[in-house]
Image (cartoon, rainbow, N blue to C red; front, top):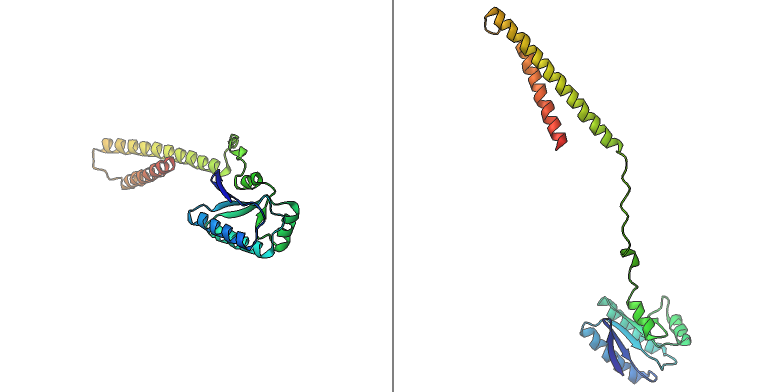
Length: 199
């Protein structure tokens, strides 16, 4: 029995047939690997021509233990006849089996994701969505209202000043004064709303 490591995968090779005594040794070796944190294991059995159901059951139980540690045990060196035997043991298969250890290692090593190397296309610029167009229209309307309010306040202030100057009296035109005060409030609200939309 020999042990080697490749790409972070432990390859445990056992030669000859696997009887009850051999499976006990293999079980001890696999349990030690799991205790050492090596939970990706290839059990390479190049000379095994047949696996008895009890042996398959033991290996399947070890595979469950590896799965609890986020790992897996895979058989390698298994001929087609024995692979069929393993497949017929349970559905879904209790354990995966490959003809070579290279195939088993490849299973643990997925191919490089070539799509990650491809540039990610940026989405084509889209025309203004209706919501954006509506927002721009609202801002334009606010600007127009603001301009009109400023013009009206300026004109009322001019007229009031002319009347006061002509009469040389304190402001008695309360209606005009209130109108100016109201428009100034409207102007301030419009400015605040416009500033909020710009932010």
